[in-house]
Image 1 (cartoon, helix red, strand yellow):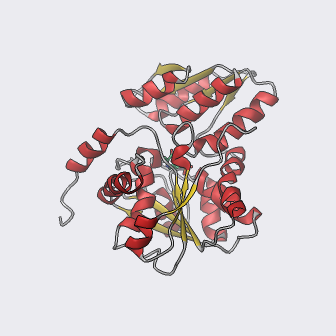
Image 2: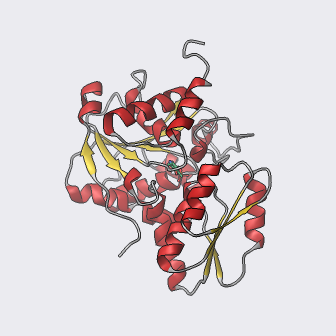
Length: 311
Ligand SMILES: *Cc1c(COP(=O)(O)O)cnc(C)c1O
């Protein structure tokens, strides 16, 4: 039995009416940890446990850390998550709630990650948040489920951070005979490490992350995601933080699910009428990747702090 759930697949009436398309939603926001991350991380943790590892370490103050903590608790394996001082109180609580020991260290993720790496020994598995083939094949189960449901879809809309989810989606398409199906890869301005790499023709390192979509905040996408952008039909779209936040609030209204701006970015590709990447497609599948770390109050505070749409 895998640690993740088979999630509902909905035909969205509100989004279909709004866009004039058949919009399908794969609701991974309903995973027990609130995000798709459990698919790949659960599979990786199970493999490490079977290989005899007796401790898991993560350096993610976001959904990856929560998923490792959950997987460890389910498997009876102790977990240590090292997060930087910037990790929100809410995210810390979610990690501790899963029974993991939380170490707060350093001003940025780099420092927390160095501390996490210093804790490793032969019995400990380090669980990377996105750059691991075990994660990608775990994430690919999302596409397996959609294909098994037998719906017709002609594009996949997916948010991109470090590119683990994107790599899993493409792996899932390929292993289900859908290697030609286009993927719309959505990022926010300020966290657009894939868009910039595709433009430059090589991977780039962003100087900093300047977006409220913190779960998309990888300064560099993994090599696999960049390589897939050359071998698969991947179309990049970059949305504003405002569009991502407004999509979150509209989605809450339409489907009663609270998701992070990282997921709102993918939803903005549909809610934002100015979006052109989707124009050629009739039946998009949206990966509702979820995210547990943003409260409703936080979304509203972020939205109030956005510059005016016109300026
Ligand atoms: C991790 C995460 C992403 C991005 O996934 P990557 O594998 O890093 O590209 C998007 N949305 C949510 C909610 C996440 O937790």
